[in-house]
Image (cartoon, rainbow, N blue to C red; front, side, top):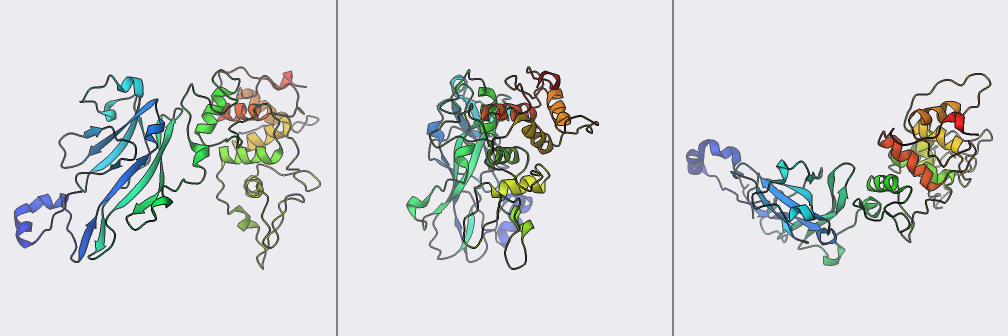
Length: 374
């Protein structure tokens, strides 16, 4: 448990300036200890996680390797704990004086562990609180250890209700370089690097069977979901901007309809809403969007360029509408060499490759050019 000081008049005169580091326990309150419970460490054979405690009462940081399910706590209220990840093979050679904060090869996390004890009224039934965190892996691109808050548990909680897996965590769990990204995307596959990056960034996810099917074509609804995930953020509230009086909603397109009554909306409604609101898509002249139609390269180029907000030149008289968009992708070295025609239906793998090159600003890979396409 963290150390607390009950400070009275005499203690005040004796402690003087050290009160800057003391915590006064309010009258009628008791301390409920809080710790951070770490889940998932046993599923990470390739990395070793270190905990590092620092604070005003520690002359040197306290560093240790937390165990699966361990509830880490601080020895003093004003201390804090940070987590780091190191390659497991390398960790075997690290000595007892190892400090991950001084190691450029160690991955840190942006998630702050909540280990602040609580003040509760005397007589409370709450004896402890565990803030639970899932540690699914590392993001090799950002060089970060991923730590996800999963919920809180006290002795008053229903035991089997925790941890609560945060929505979308399965799509965010990262893959270490060298391991399979999906069952059909293993190291050495054509789109391995792209899908490793995009899955670790939470942009793409696979099918229920664990596959990605990179050679399958992709329809406009699926494509829109991915471009929104890569360049925008969907909070599920976009349709509120299309609300009519009386609680009804305007339709986005003639074939993307708002739900009526208690009917469930189509799964892509909010993604199309975000894309339309942010001028990523504008549909066809007849007012339709054709969500189930397979998307071709020219259409994809326009949506991608709009999504990444890349500047384009004006269309010259007599030139096709898509030339400025394709030219920009060509300049960015973002056109996979498997794309040969403007009206070619693109695959899920080709889409991923274009996203990857733009998000990482990778201009070193071989790319198609506008003049090479038909």
